[in-house]
Amino acid sequence: MYDENLKTFVSIADCGSFNKAAEKLFISSTAVIKQINVLEKRLDLPLFIRSNQGVKLTPAGNAIYKDAKYLFDFSERSIAHAKELMNQKDKTFRVGSSILNPCIRFMELWNHVNDRFLNYKIQIIPFEDNHDEILSVIEQLGVKFDFIVGVCDSEKWLARCNMLTLGRYRKCVSVSSNHRLAHRKRLNISDLYGETLVMVKRGDSPLNDLLRNDLEKNHPAIHIRDAEHFYDMDVFNECEQSGYVLLNLECWRNVHPLLSTIPVNWDYSIPYGLLYAANPSEDVQELVSLLQQSL
Image (tube, rainbow, N blue to C red; front, side, top):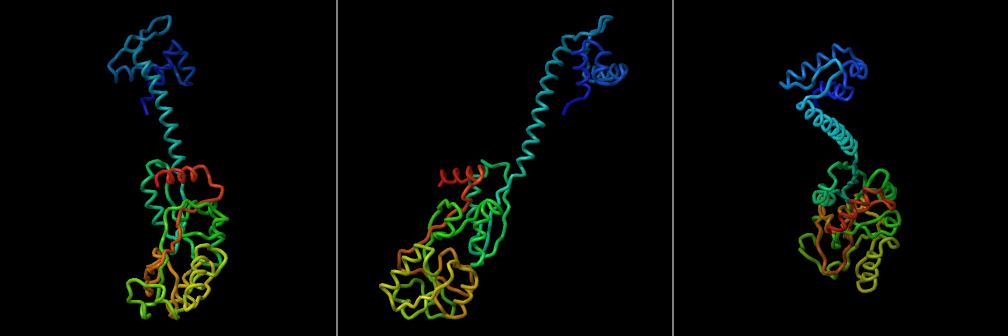
């Protein structure tokens, strides 16, 4: 960071003697004198006035002495700051990602605020959409994951985590490419009469229960088939192979390439948001608060 001979120069000035500086630095007096001679020659300046009583600084030496002390202090603070940044660089936000819960939306949000978290990096951690194991995934928020972006009004999910709502997705239906409705651009509810509609069973999603109540009361010609509380790829495959109609979301229109997703003339939608631990760390809470302000 600086000429090491400056340390010897400052030590001599502080001690007032070449010999005393040599003792302090644990080197020989000859080595001290040699270093100062090299420094004076390099700077082309006399730094000390030598006498039998010791040495004292020349005006040029006094100026160099003051600046050297500042340089030492600045150098130490610079190195300490660099080490601090190096340690902070290890800080990571871990983002879960799956087919039904991709991390794309998180990355879009991150790009707007990452200048406030310059010492953080993003690690994407994949997980499986398995209805038997998804609750254990949610319970890993704060342990294995810091964030997951997901569609959610699940009471079981929200009992295990916090959610910052980001928006809503419309409920649609999906059918196999050879289904009689596959060519339609939009449907009325009556178009589903006589069909078997697959949707999650009662008891976990208030919004899905509200839609189910409406269909059972006002549209009994639609046959409802229960799926598990949480979709996985098996549900999409079953509907494609069986000819059933799947209650789906606009954000999942491309999950299965052999299913066509069609909007329906109804007013049902579901929130999606940023899921994070029930007891988040300070840095996670800071990011959530910043996103909350910017939304």
